[in-house]
Structure formats: C-alpha cells, structure tokens
Image (cartoon, rainbow, N blue to C red; front, side, top):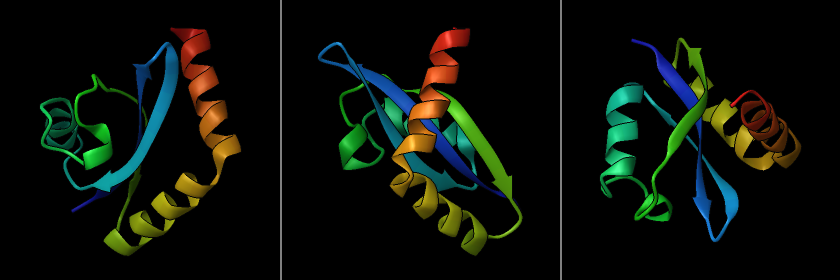
Length: 86
C-alpha cells in the first residue's frame, strides 16, 4: 500500500489558500474535503489537488507531510507553478 502527501488550494476572499495532508487514497480524500467531511479547516470550500507525491510507508509520508506544512516557501512555489500553468 502506498501513501501520498498532497497539496490542495482553494480561493477564499479572493486569495488562494492551501492545505497539506497525507492519505492512502487520494481520490477518496479529495472527495471528502470537497463534501465537507474532511479536515475542519477545509470545510465549506471547493478544493483542487495541485500536488501529490507517493511514499512506500505511512511514517515516511507523515514525516514529509510535516516538512511540507512547515515549508511555506516550497508551498508558495508549488502554488505559483500551478497558477502559471493553469
């Protein structure tokens, strides 16, 4: 079984906000975020998956999720690349 670290974006008050998480089923997790059943922070917004990376273990995914959550520069760079290519 593989685990994924992912980055979602949404528009709130004319600004792009992002959310980082990990899961073993990326499609199911995105649907839960968009249906209001995901994390508390994501409720009420329409989310778009802009980044995902696969890992072989849950612990490796959790470690990298934490790193991406704290690395605002990398998150900003991923968002800019997505918006540039949109």
